[in-house]
Amino acid sequence: MKTRILVGAALIAAVLGIYLLDAHVLGNTILSRAVLWALALLTLHEVLALGAKRIETGPGLFLLGGIAITSVVAPYLAMSHGVPIAVPGTLLVLAAVVAGGVRLLGMAPLRSAAAAFPEAALLGTGILATGGLVCFLDGILARPHGLHAAIAVIAIAKTADMSGYFVGTLVGRRRIAPAISPKKTWEGTIGSLLGAAGVGALLAPALNGVPPAFGAAAGVLLGLAAFLGGMLASGLKRWAGVKDSAVLLPEFGGFLDLLDSILLAAPVAAVCLHGA
Image (cartoon, rainbow, N blue to C red):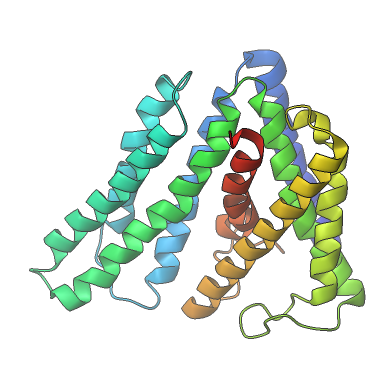
């Protein structure tokens, strides 16, 4: 527990440092967005590595995925002001399909279509599950005053994680899906939703100045999305036969372990804040 708290405090300090640099030194969100997309690429690497534990993969899979995401993101970062979020999102979907198709056409003659298709599907799905979801949080960052809203979204999602962990550890008894995530309990999940609702109400001014009641409701929705994101990531790790997505940070694991709740909360937050 002590190690988890210390590492968590260091991660919070890093996020706050990037926030302060963007807000008070650079005067824009370019550093936050660059770090966000770097994390997306690193998370893609972990997703592909997990898939490689169960299906046959050839060399260069991550390189192709990295090129696919970067080819969309680089120009988007350069001219993002005024670009609707649907544009890079659509291009990332296209990039995922093209990258998967290129991989299938390139590898099928070397092995067989039956062996090459799962690899191509893994690549396309990995691009959508990382870059495609990160795109929503980046879209929030790209809007006026988006830095505060993005920090609020991250805070709500991670509060849901931490509340669920601590409540589940202290009083959790009834497990939800032990085959997928042995430690998740109903008590912890209820605690995570209450924590997310409380932080949502508290940070309502950062969410486009919405009323606290709306912030609490949005917090519950983000908490549910964070829970589902964590369950999906746990299912992927169990399928790959590992506990954590990587050995990166003590008690936390890899980048996927850090971002799983945020990845699925990002599109929900975009709908809540900019659904119109």
